[in-house]
Length: 195
Image 1: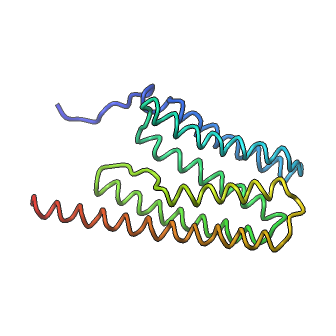
Image 2: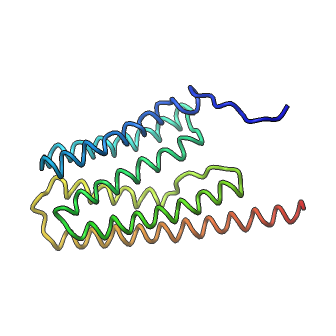
Image 3: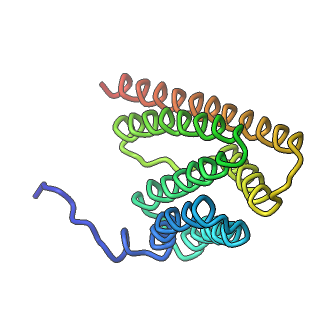
């Protein structure tokens, strides 16, 4: 009989990778309080470093122990991008140029999210991150961690790294869009062949 498929909470929701993603989301308020409220820059660095490491480990665990799930494919990038936006907004209290990078990242993620949802509806599949997105994420985390730890970083270094991050974010958006529209075109061609 038809009907909605029941969610296997243990195998699809309460997995170690998903719990790590939830943990990253819970660390966001702590980070903002430490950096903006308490000016505890070293502790802020440690929090973001732990978040970045859990982001790496949850993907490794998911692949190694076959814990990849559609929920995880959605939750992981949400936790990742929410953390990045929060860190950039916190950093903008000291480095004003970071505000523009945060806005760019948010706009990129909104557009990616719209494309992601449309692809999900069209292809009935949840698509994971691609390598160019991961590279942009690694460079962004490096930039954020460096600014958290090196409080008196030269302004020139800030501008160069911010520009590099902005370039990679825009490039990633373009490549995701190209990939997404290619998948949509292939889906339409398949529908035309079978329809």
